[in-house]
Image 1 (cartoon, rainbow, N blue to C red):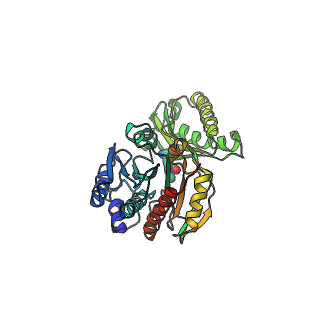
Image 2 (image 1 turned 120 degrees about the vertical axis):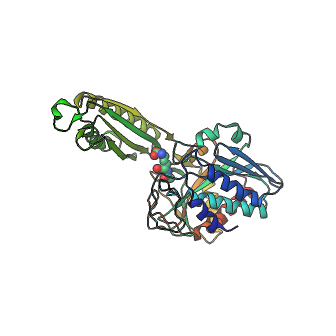
Image 3 (image 1 turned 90 degrees about the vertical axis):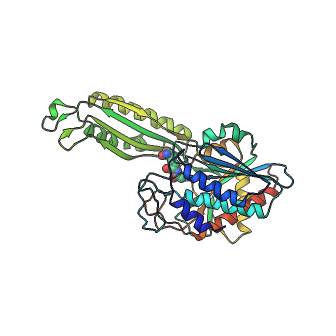
Length: 374
Ligand SMILES: CC(=O)N[C@@H](CCC[C@H](N)C(=O)O)C(=O)O
């Protein structure tokens, strides 16, 4: 299996959450090419569940890879860059899928005792595939006992991996705020209520929530990544929209931030003569690693040529948190050495990490196979 070729093919076809039709077909074709009688493939929406029967099963181990891209215009200049100008694999999910295929190929050639399920999960970037997948009859039927996953880490060199027990990724909530007021001629501000001014002032004002309304010992982030308002340069804006995300180390802090945003919005409705509506989009539970699995993984890493470093928690979000809420396991960072970070239009991970990742995932399956974690 040529992992670089596969990664480049996947890199060309990034798709939005639950729109991963080409990706699903490409994955199916690759899986078909290594298929044997021990493999059972189930489609779930635009994702795939691939079960490989073990030789003497006592449990089911699952490995999850997310498959969606991000709405970013790629600026890498690579000859295998995204064919869709509006989408890019800027979060490394092309790597995640390829590594899963590499591990699957190895598992087919070198079977283990227990059943293994490869979960190709849609919509990690949004609106969230893990939660509905976990609730589905298809996943429940697989009776997964333990689960793990990885995320590429651009800031770590290839051959370095990192994780920690407990919280690894933050609790998250998306945030969409719509402003509606009275637009009008640019020359008559006194006859209008300008939503460009309301939204931009709101954006600056809510920055005080993290610094003045949350416990500084508990981490919190409130980021507005997109602001839109109005229609034309000489018309006062009737509508505006802020789009962002809330990240916290404690699940309860999200609720504090949401309620403070609502208090600000009530004040702004009065002071800026407008209607504000708030939508929290999708929410992800934090990724909490099971310490027993992290210990096993550290031993696995020691037995390979990789270097382990203890991670710090990150304010990134991951709906893999929902898996770990229900099923014991862990997630880890895999070094891929890119000058540009996750969600950057120039992210360019080192492809030598593909084989490193596939080998490590397979080795972890082997070690889980022989372990009896109580
Ligand atoms: C690993 C990573 O970058 N994940 C995304 C998850 C996004 C969740 C949701 N769309 C949100 O923005 O809250 C991240 O941005 O951390």
